[in-house]
Every structure is written in structure tokens, then in C-alpha cells.
Image (cartoon, rainbow, N blue to C red; front, top):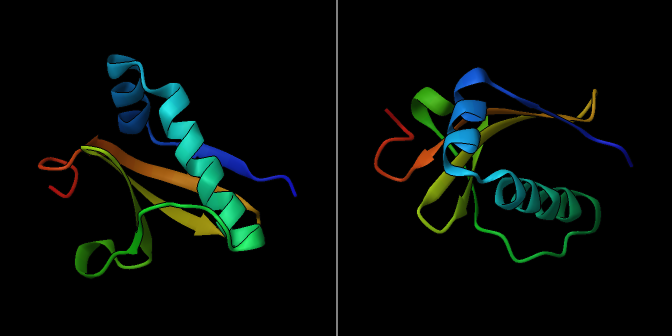
Length: 88
């Protein structure tokens, strides 16, 4: 099972600014394990409203908003930011 992870420019800027490459990748890998096997401790939520079709992963104070394309086996990371700023 090979999945591709694509990042928006804003999410890459946040990752590089806060040196979070490893933490973000770790959470996304846990999510992919859940899809494949159904076992991993993650805080995942399906979003509504403006973000319909997207999911949110929580890692401490950081939120990762992403879209899943199962046909292409790809995750598109739209936004990564702190809890108070990510949904704006």
C-alpha cells in the first residue's frame, strides 16, 4: 500500500517555520494505518460546513486539515496551524 502525501504551500510554510516535519508525518502515517487496518490511537474528526469533505487530525495544539483521494491513494494537506487559527 503506497500513499502519496501532497502539501499546500501554507502547510509547508507552517511545518518549516515550527520544525514539525516528523510530528506531522507520524500522525499521517497513523491515519493511514487506521484506513488499512483499523487500529491506531488518533484523534480524527470529519469536518462540516466550509470544510465539508475534509478531515481534521489533532496533535496537541496543532490541527492538520486534509482531504483523502482514495482512488489515487493520496492525502492532500490543506492547512496546518494552531487550534485557534486553523479554521479561519
